[in-house]
Length: 449
Ligand code: MG
Image 1 (tube, protein in one colour):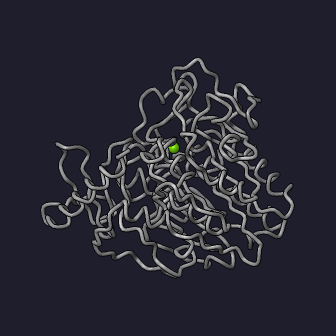
Image 2: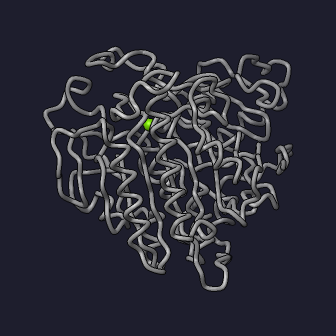
């Protein structure tokens, strides 16, 4: 079933007006008969648009994710708000562009950058509403003080790494050990990365199994397939796509294990699962990463898209997205509408009957009508930031891109040219000019204090 390809007009709604209308919108309690839904967000690291069977990969086998797509919705124009790790995560958890939520760049072992404590995360809002919450996997939103860890940001519990799995010698020059945490305590050093995906999965299963009737929010942010890619003996060497394929197929196994747990517990019909990635593949990795067993081909594929992690071409920002909620999201549906991880906060809070923050601009909107196939999402524009530098805007099928003041203006029609091969800026001067102006206005508005 098609939910309709966006063919939106240029309406010229200002960013601030759009934001204000969202923030002022009354929450729609869609929880059915007092039985509030569970939410599972599965967020992979550096997995590309083309890495799954159901997104066209020729050799990586992902039967569980393919089945989840058949049971739910597969999206083809789904975005993250940044093409690198920390800001992408900040935007997902706050519903706001990284420049707006104070996390435009990455943090790491030697950095005290963190998600500002004034920001409200999905977990905080849901926990305040009575949800059990748990973060499993990579955090990467601050770690220098216990209050900055997941347990200080709305999660009852956390099991995982404070930042990326490569942030140790020899790939990153730091003396700070990379350690596995449970809540606020380091419990393993060095970290056995071979078994991380399996251990994250067993933690997830346990979290789902132990709960009573209260609803839960599980944020499972896999450390994989970020370099160094690792998996356990039983998966290593099993994929036709080599070690990278082994790692994606381990994640696929994990999805199957989690869905089976929901089935056994009888809560599959009351649980929304969202599966996506934090940014595109690290095709442009620096030489320092090619040590200690890492190879060029240990990275993913952007499929037909141009660019990679760390760029504002589609390959950096557009990611697989599968949403599954049996009985609510029509099975086998597909959408080409533009949506993003910033929509998760308003969507989940609304479905839970929780209040949306009204004292700040949210960039996301409730996309449940889109997930259900009932309506398009009123996103006029999607913006592509590299750090604090706004480099692109999408409206309908049109994407305008300009890296900096002196760079060439680029205009692509993403419908007929998803690979951004044909710059038609000179053939479409009106569209180019309108989008350039829209980008300028939004860039000024979003960075204004
Ligand atoms: Mg990443």
